[in-house]
Image 1: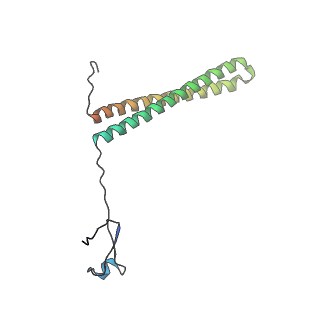
Image 2: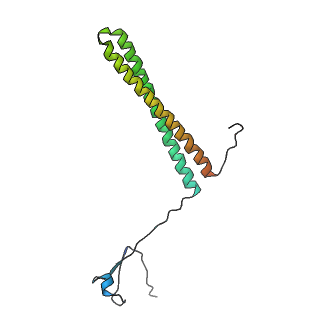
Image 3: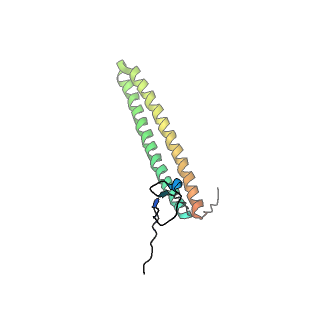
Length: 137
């Protein structure tokens, strides 16, 4: 039994016994076809995607909290140095203010990531189909 196997490739070579217009494919006899794929996301894939995003936001939130803690500690250190070193007190006060501003910014970033994490958690619950019923709120 001689069966012909058809392989789907991007380019197909036209055999000599097949009819083809010369101008359409050129002399070499190659054709090009477009390949389209459709991605269908299921609820499980969507749930896993939201869970992954939630973990990423949790990690970023913790980084923001650590940054706020470190910048706040440095600001307190510079405040102490300003009292301890009166000759360079002005420089220490400026550095203290910069560190305090960085601490506030890092805290705001942690707060933002906390809310992104909550939003992804809610989206993951909706994607999984399970709705948790809370008594209040």
